[in-house]
Image (cartoon, rainbow, N blue to C red; front, side, top):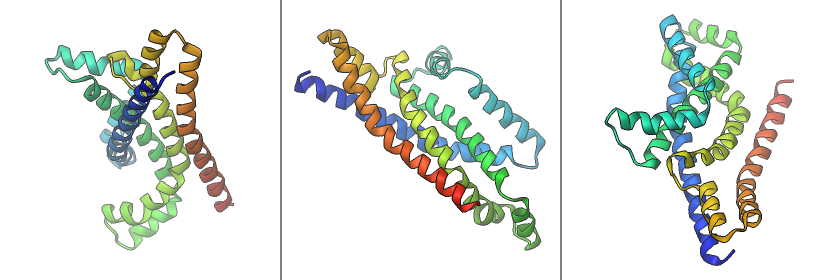
Length: 213
């Protein structure tokens, strides 16, 4: 593999990281909305968001990207490949993060909410100052774990022609006829990104387990 080919892989890596950052940031914002709606006292909101989560957890990510890219085009809204995959991954992330955080919110001892109500704190104040800080701490290991899955899942963006790391590797492999070398380098790049995050998630999980004993 020469220098130009390696630089092309780095360009693909750049788009993999950019897509992950966009989807994760968008997923954080929309996932929080989903989690709050899922745990609200409104049965309608809870049922709607439960259906939303079930839809994305019960269908393959590949199909979701396909539907966003081609479905929006059929509806008259033609998007660039990177825009379509960014929307698809953000929706996917919002459903998974919403469910992770829903579980974390419900894992906070019920007495915390009752104490906040006894102090006459409003809903926003109860969630912002009492419940969410504890829920976020509980959710950190699972959130980091999902981030690792999201990074690896970006390889599916090739379905709509988006050139991220895996597709860049496929292009070079087809040109050089050296698949073992090329995909070995691609795999090493994924490993160098995901392995530290996996270690971080494991460490956070152990720390949380120790703190709750």
